[in-house]
Amino acid sequence: MGEDNLKQEITGNDTFGIVTLITGMLALIGCWIPLLNIISMIIAISGLIIGICSIVKFLNKRCRSCALAITGMILSVITICIGSKINSVILNNFPENFKSTSNLEQLSQNSNTSSKGSNTSSSDIVKSDMPTNLTLGQQNALKKAKSYLEYSGFSRSGLIEQLKFEKFSSEDAEYAVNNCGADWNEQALKKAKSHLKYSGYSRSGLIELLEFEKFSSEEAEYAVNNCGANWNEEALKTAKSHLKYSGYSRSGLIELLKFEGFTQEQCEYAMKEIGYN
Image (cartoon, rainbow, N blue to C red):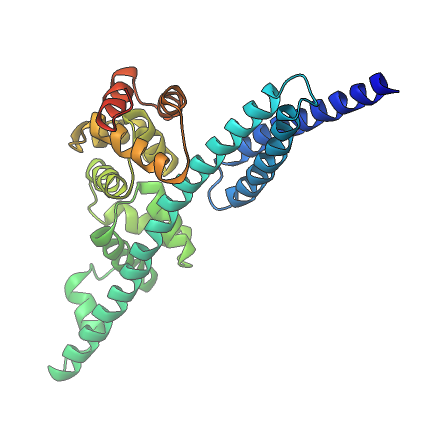
């Protein structure tokens, strides 16, 4: 009977470890989808709890190993870190979009006020700023596109999607983007600098993020090469950010930084600066 009980305990613990590992893998797969990755982070937290239960059994000498549980917990922690970073980037851009919308409305109100004071109609203002052969939809789409570009960086396809989200037709959105005078290399550079204000990125990680935002590979390369980032300092910034939310061994933190695209030299610099020798 004692041997049978021991086998059951070991089998049960192996099941916990396998569940933790599978949970961590599923959570890591889903963590790359913005906002929806909240579900993945919840799954990751569940995996951490199951993994802790497995480790407790191991410490009580009721199982042979907890390697699967530890591996699953590491994947869950990585999921939470990546998901939090992606969501913070997306949410940081929302205020800019709201700001651009409110500022455009304010400009429209000021324009109406000034037109009343000078007895100038709004149609006269449009005629003075725009070609006379444009439709009203093209005129307004072009205004909106220029307003967005004043406050945030957009890729060509990203700006088209934003205008279509504002209910402009595909034709009007295409016209506006083709005639707004944007330099897409400079837009990518503006976006890269905006991201670097809020979080640390490796060179390859920033390129991947810009490409995710629909910039071309050439535009992303231009932005990264001209943004003035010190990649050693970016590695240090990222390491400090991770340590705010969780504890890491030196090798574990280096592994996480390398997973995010930092080189071994950049990782070593970060370890030295935070005193992890």
